[in-house]
Image (cartoon, rainbow over all chains, first blue to last red; front, side, top):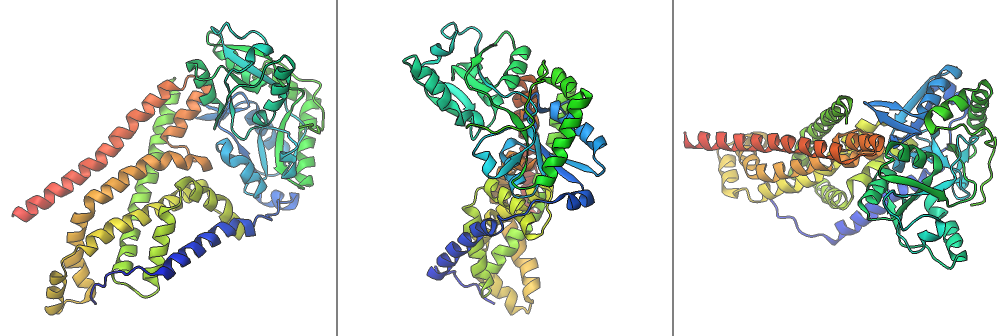
Length: 284
Length: 214
């Protein structure tokens, strides 16, 4: 056997392109992944996905997952006649995992939007998600919505909050102003950090997230006013998985009935939301 | 930051080291095997290796991992986050290692190989006794370079729920709303890990030099 110098072969490049295309086609071919029905879930257990950096809904303290949704999962374990397996991962992979069938449900605060309803179904809302803005405490130039004119805003990429910024834009235009530059972040901790550093002037998130953050850092941040109409977060399952949806809704209804729901909301959000709708059809 | 937080980052360090170690331990020999296939110009296989290397070098690790993690279950292969992470690391690093090994193989003096042939060594023996010891030495700096890159690319594995040093630090920042201290701790942990690897390389090189001098 002797060494032969490799010659460039035009065929191999074409082959490479072909294989690359095939590789990309694989998920498309199987994207019609079917969601597991309750029979299958009862057999193998329910697989739920939660986030790890979305305080107060889900976060990790001293290496232990905690927050509103994690306590709900503890209750769900007692409520369900089958096993509940939890996977903790960043937001990026959660909705993709639910719509491809890797996870049965996203037990996190997924804001219900029209766009998401195309590929997901949502349970009863778990909190109020009206959008608010937060600013630096020492920034005296902002005291009401109209002061946000032209200011730089930080918001999570691919979020419902980003999708509803035009609503704030309309509010500003009514006053003769306009929405400033929008900076998108992969998750909120980075946005808050940039706000503290002065790279953005305000950050838009849901009232619950912001209240918790401001309560923790009252010397740095200050809560502003609402910048959207009604909005609610809920848990998500794959589109058309009605069996699982009604199971989860049954669980939420029972938690409401026993007063446990309000108790957990008070503990994690600082207030209970007694008037949450059982089902929500979003306008946006 | 509490002691519990520090412990969480240290647990992340165990994950980072374990995954990197697994990736290196599997990826380097696989890379060598791929390089040999190409070097020996094995029909079909050599071309497939060339295609594989081209595709993998053009594929971002995160994208590859997301694809493996979410696409494999659809074709009936259940895969957990750790296995998916190791598979993605190995697939990625093997492609780069293949090229490092191949460079050493291409520069290997042909006359030595022919000399070994002429004394009747079979192909396996020729490779093990003559080729391998010399290409290991030539490849070592390039391989260690790739290994240190691999260690630092592990934060990308967090997308599927693997908690490495960086993810552990991010989680703490998200809980305390004070992200800088955990990031400093995280940064301070990567340095010694890479340092150990580089020290290992130095040690092997010195030992080889001494063996040569003797």
